[in-house]
Length: 102
Image (cartoon, rainbow, N blue to C red; front, side, top):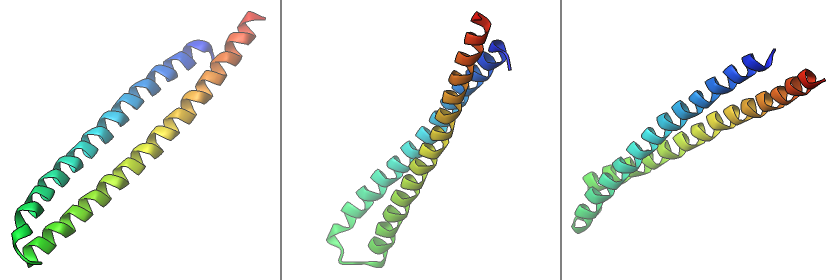
């Protein structure tokens, strides 16, 4: 693999980073907004005793928080893979550049 191919691959990875970050950020922000709305609904239900509606809302809050946590874990895994690949490309670019210097 030559330096130009590695640089092209590096640019592709930077784009993949941006896409992955954007995708996960939007999903997580969506979950946070949903959690905020659900919490407001639960607050409005405070006057009621443990009604069925309140229990359902509390369950939805818990499920949404769990989905948000899973999304963050997926984001971390996706970005970790991309970081590993970037580090590999940087290493290969260094090796190619050194071999071209000699």
